Amino acid sequence: MFNIENFDIKLNTNLIGRNFVYTNEIDSTNTELLKRNEFPKNGTVLLSEFQKNGRGRKDRTWISEPEVNLTFSILLKNIFLQKSINILNLGTALALAQTLENLYQFQVELKWPNDVLINKKKIAGILLESTSKGKNIEKLVVGIGVNVNQPDFKGDFNIRPTSIRLEFKQEVSRERFLSEFLNNFELIFEISKKKPNKILDDWKARCSMIGEQISIVENGEKKYGIFEDLDESGYLILRSGDTTEKISFGDVSLLG
Ligand code: BTN
Image (cartoon, rainbow, N blue to C red; front, side, top):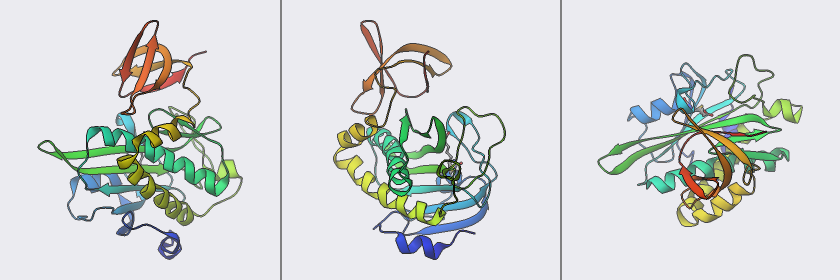
């Protein structure tokens, strides 16, 4: 059982998680915050022990054992530009990396656009979704799944999964992880708005694929080239010979 007191005592934010909603079972924390208007407060964090219909990128499912991991979403209601959403997507991965580094001294690798890896295995996933009213983005929901104390994983996965417990060789506090992450996330959220280049630089410092030959699947089409850089919006710049192309979405793999 998640101990809200232990979480709250270490939470050091002004906005994020100040309205904290805990539930045992839900369809999906992202869906709930996106579709329902019962959580009007900016910065609300909704945590569920079990999601009946946890969702990942590209319509994949996110399966997480109840009571041992973290599956939660953050509601942001400020006006966003598409560019800031992309930066915040990378920034969320960065905040997860900082948390894993600070608490457990892991060496974290970030994979574009927002996978968080330890020893080449996936420890956390991020799904940003939004609703719009006219030209304005009304709500942005940042959904995060972290494999915390799950002892093993069964099934087929796009990237092999792991958990903090498996890598750290002992159980850890979910409450401590969540408070530390939200503290980091709030700072990153501010930096995303004011100094997006700082997010890009810190993200790139943890990405080992830049400069490497990659393949990328975008809308069912496979492309090959060198992962040259990120542009100022966080898009991947793919070089093939003399030409470059900007990619906004896709699954990247190293070649060879
Ligand atoms: C991915 O790696 O494909 C993204 C996974 C995101 C999973 C989280 S768990 C909490 C939130 N609710 C969902 O339905 N999905 C996100």
